[in-house]
Length: 317
Image (tube, rainbow, N blue to C red; front, side):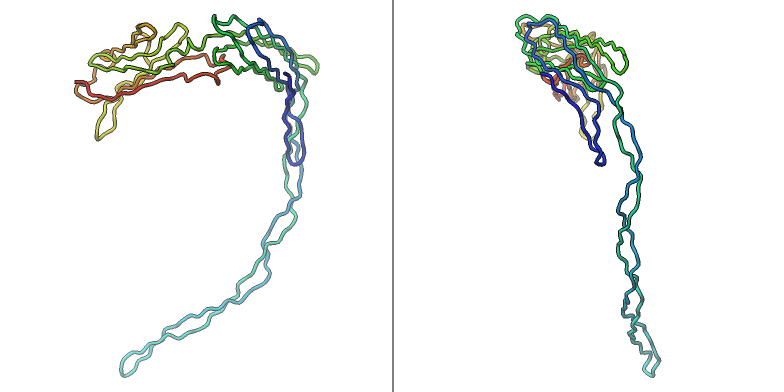
């Protein structure tokens, strides 16, 4: 399905079209090895012109005065044979207070008005080549290619069964009034279930002793690029908890052992944290991250979570 897309914006009652493009949507079911099509559009850029606009402004003007009065008391005293006698004598004090009102008047303001200027037309030639799908999977993947001015994009709404990677190679040439873009995409697939296998059941059987920390996940396959992070903190009652380690581990700092359909991870705590004190409470948190090439992954919105973690707090005797 191909649909023309464009953006129309209004600016101070003057309308202009920005760059335009097209969209192509198609379904990949494993039957094709290549998809060829062309999308057309127009590239523009924004310029501005200045205009003077009449507007209504407001000012305060004097319209007269009003008399405002209030009573003041003055204390007067006199001497008598019985002593000093005082009393408060009232006196009215008045003053003139100005009165104002808001008056409209015409004022002028300079404004910037945006408008679009045609640069050139754009023709984008898509050449999408598909590699083989992993065995046992029947694909049903929706691809959406779109252009907008000089830019273009390929994304996918997947069935969730596949990780879809797209390596792009682009060339372009400029003719008079026309830019031609050749976009070559090499599409590869990975089995989502195999790549995300260690994420499926989370971290289980987290055990900490004097020497090691170990836990179990679902099987880590050769297609699962992982990164292991360890956070260990000393737990104190009346002060902050100092971190003994808080970083990603390299592959030499832990071991993996395949046990049936599971993988056991073992970390040597004595080597990593030699200052860890016995009979003291510590918190241990392990996080397993799945490292995907997100720069080339075009269906990441349809995928499961790529990180699992588990925490335990205990005292080693």
